[in-house]
Length: 234
Image (tube, rainbow, N blue to C red):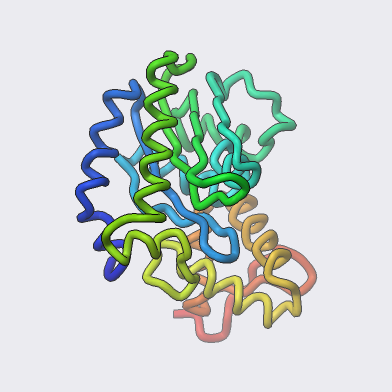
């Protein structure tokens, strides 16, 4: 990990966010931003619980975080176990096997109609945040937004307008999407849907599928989501 992400991980503000896990009474926090294609990139996670949940949301393309990013509204889910299946069908169906998260609280990072990213808090036990915890989360989200927009460090301001070519954890997904778009003659949004559908059907993280495509270990059939070995397979 180099460049922008490395600098952000060293930012003292990330230490403050880490300390907020206890204050908010949750088991994990994640901070993500949206690139110019509105694809989410995780800047920081407090641990494996948050990291696994963020990867799951990214793979299936749905959940409280994506909803907060899309709508710019706060999404509070006190118990994923009783969430109507039609709301996040793919996410809910995978939760029992892949993640022990029961409560999720997603706070958009943005001003007005402009959403820069999302602060996502997760907890292993169901139940709401207290009024004070919810207020603290809103303040933390507003503080992070201000930091990204008006921080003293140039790299921090740039976090809000990341390009797909930057040194990102999910840059390989952008690369795979571009390759598939050319191979299948599909627009980028439809290509991303195909990638997600294949990852979901095979039970693999989206980033792993993308790595195989970029490394030419995997191709997706022109007629569907059936993977076929590439001639250059190792």
